[in-house]
Amino acid sequence: MVRLALILALLVAGTTLARVSPAGAQPVRTVGPYTVAVWFASTPVYPEEGNALYIQVTRADGTPVLGLEQTLRLRVGLPNQATETMPLSPERDRLGVYRVDLLLPRAAPYSMTLLGRIEDTTVHELFVTGRDLDKVIVRERQYPKGSAYVVAFTFGLYLVGLAYLVARGALHWHRRRSALSG
Image 1 (cartoon, one colour):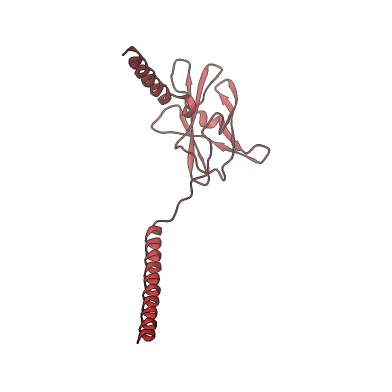
Image 2 (image 1 turned 45 degrees about the vertical axis):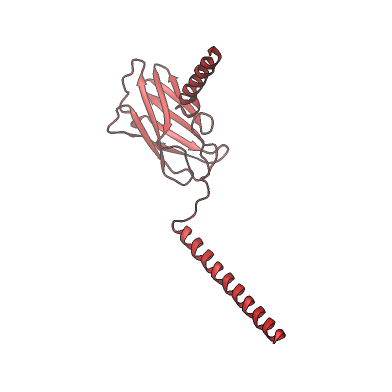
């Protein structure tokens, strides 16, 4: 009985820990007296699909830092390739949260560097997809809408053709057998 209770307790603890696993957690960095959190608007992240990267900046006491769209930028790039520096846009309904709209062209590890200043503090923080942020992954193969009807129709035609050939062969066999016996 004790063994069953212990196994049950371990099972409950394991499922609880699996739910709060840091694998999908947003990276949080301390930059001077500020806390910077970064996350994607929607996950999983697919190439060639619009997504946004959110950046939240707060002071040590948790109050949001405003006006950073003038002093911070996000540099996005692939390792050893061209980069693009983008401005931040403040989120209207969430103070201290900024947004950068992204359209990542392919599944790859992207480097996202937050550059500039938070008040008097210089910022140069690197976040990498697949390490700090969610991976950019290839979407599973999807069939177009209505393809099931095309498959069903084609299969139906195949069955009708097969039935025709079987009936034609049976009729030929029957006529040939009648001619031989009669």
